[in-house]
Length: 268
Image 1 (cartoon, rainbow, N blue to C red):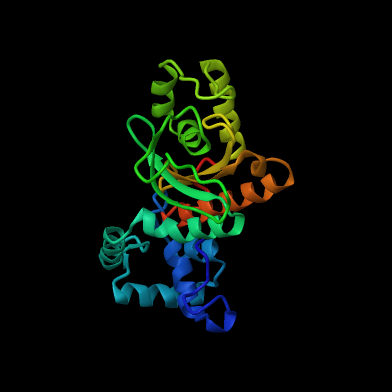
Image 2 (image 1 turned 90 degrees about the vertical axis):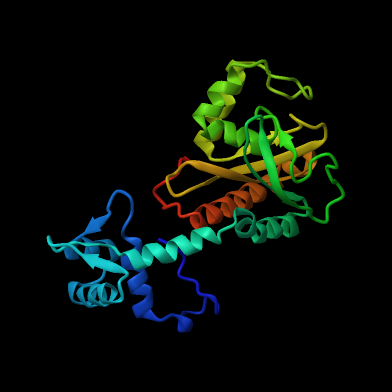
């Protein structure tokens, strides 16, 4: 279920319960449950049937829901139209930027947003922290090889079609830590999927470490990655645990904004 925070703040006194409950009803619908009955909606939201019925009647009257001849409820065209407007104005970079900024400011390293490309992971945004290390040759538009660095390897782990194609080609060595055999890379990708994040320790650039996590869309398929990179020494020991937590939280937040349900995705 989406966060209940509102633009005015997280304070409970700013909440309008009837609006929150109506939102709960709307969020009960998904691709597997395009139509639901009164009892199902009451059970899914924890609301009693009387309250559920009154809210449903209001939503139907507003055109946000429709009622079928069988007595079930479905998302109405008015809500679909509003969703289309939101989708048209949606920018992955705009949604991710506050999360990148928070990571960069919190840890002092550089936060990256990457998406899958034909020949590697494409950096579509980055924000530098106050730390001393700036990776000069990685900028917006840079394409990174899939078998090295945290963001690209995360994409490789979660997109089977990219993984199959990449493993069929020779793997270039960039440093002494680069994985260059299909067997070793397969094992590492399986580990990434099991843990839900990637740690890069000087496998692409000497002296540079990174942590990345996957960003999923509504269908549960990877759409992007959020990562944090900086001096390798900063990505070891006890500090690493905080970075992993921060990066995974940022990726999960962006996934939620893309419409991913809590039970979708393959973060493992």
